[in-house]
Length: 414
Image 1 (cartoon, helix red, strand yellow):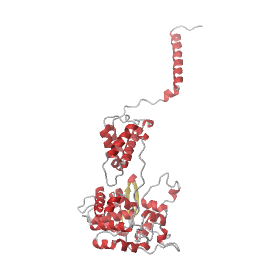
Image 2: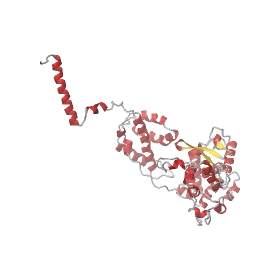
Image 3: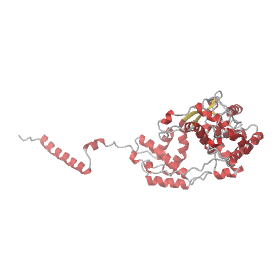
Image 4: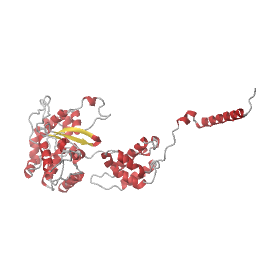
């Protein structure tokens, strides 16, 4: 029996339409499942002026300081554009523009750092846009722009006599030599970063155990051993300059907190008195990585050659670089301390590197903890977790370095 009526008329064309649609999908290389899994229409992307403040409010203070000026430049150039409009080529053009117009600084290297930071700032913004569903990860233009490769660092070891010149000049010039020598001693002993020193508070000092709490980049926190001499100087500084317990410790004589500018002024002044400091672009970060790490057998010789004793007598309130050496640390049989450290030579231009010296004498794990480096997936694998150095081992390295006993230094191995 043949069915007639509306049902028959609607069924026949419906099947024909389906067949035609399937044929079109087949030719397009699609299936009905592809249509069902297609993403819903995205909302219109915001402009850079609208979205950058959102991202800036979400990131950490350190990230905001690093990327804020570059986000401002992006807003100046593309403020009214939607964030999904720029292409990788346009980003490269902006990078070249920023690099060509960068403000020249003492340690400038042709704008490479500005280019790297601009790309990193854009990647950070677009990463948040991906997470907010504003762009597809495959459409992220910042991912397709390569950062300029970093050049090898120009930092190197500083000769004993040169380091002595830095300390002597800091102790005998400027409007606050007590503050400047305290900064040099703090960075010398702890290898801390500028941010860690500026974040130090009075309540972060543990005088009984000679420990200070350092809060540095990446929101890392660590207890770092310091010598009794440095601890006494920090306590005296906090008391004399009226640092509140929960406020910044390092201050000017009038009680005002110091900033990064104090470091800039210090090294600008040292560069005026010591032309080689300006020429080599030496900064406090050199002191973090490249310091005069003395073993006991070299200590007296260094103090006589470097003139530290004269600097100490000139400014009684300034800090010496190191105290008198201890005699407890002995080299292996038939081997001198200088031979243990390949950087210790008999030449007048003897160079010493703190972290290298710590690694040679106390092992990689202690040097890593001394520097405040955190574990990463590519750094030693799971083994690094189990051989992590303790605070007592770092204290033992510090005691050998400074020549002062430390309350946490263990005596079993050293």
